[in-house]
Length: 229
Ligand code: ATP
Image (cartoon, rainbow, N blue to C red; front, top):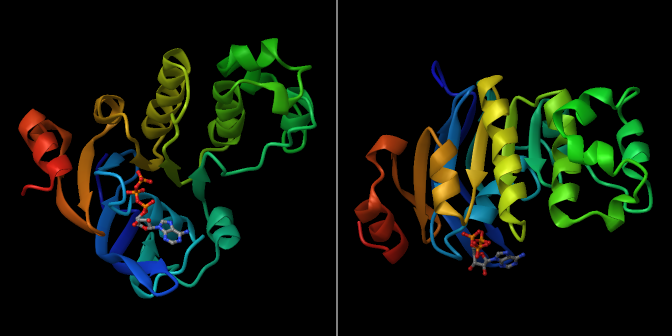
């Protein structure tokens, strides 16, 4: 990654009902850059993704896309502007086959099958009968065919078998190389760090440290998860 930030959360405050979760979160993602958002359970990572995607309103601060204030934009408007949340970026219809799912948005599924051969092998199977990993790949197919500007991935490998986890991360690496700005929340720190350019640690609704992946070592990881700074 390089250049100026494409997607920015600036001092974002947000929460649920009378419970404030994010207490001023600031994050920047550049085109062609993966920012891994790490931290203990309950730190506010999923809430950050929800605000970034427009699924949860910010009650303070701003969200900027290429310098445009999109804080008040709902999720569908952000999606049209190229900000996608994965895995649920685009719904998968469980009663339709893999082929029918792809054809709801793509005239010729060939490019998807070329890139993700295991979907080709399952083309006549109902999406609802796929493994979790196959469903995840089906969900990521639109991003491969028409890369978004910003991809927000919240626990994309949750519950997936190791081989599929690698494929999902390969997709992220390819999207990064094609210039997508990626914000990645991932419990599997090793996998996240392998693809990350920069890392942000969250704790208690705030970002406690941001820096290049090269500056993250075991001590810093331990400190971040234990809440030591
Ligand atoms: P995890 O890895 O466990 O999902 P996280 O860092 O993603 O952790 P969040 O899921 O953002 O953290 O949760 C942050 C806080 O917000 C937690 O205290 C959680 O209980 C609370 N929270 C999350 N979702 C809701 C909700 N829908 N309603 C009320 N409180 C919520």
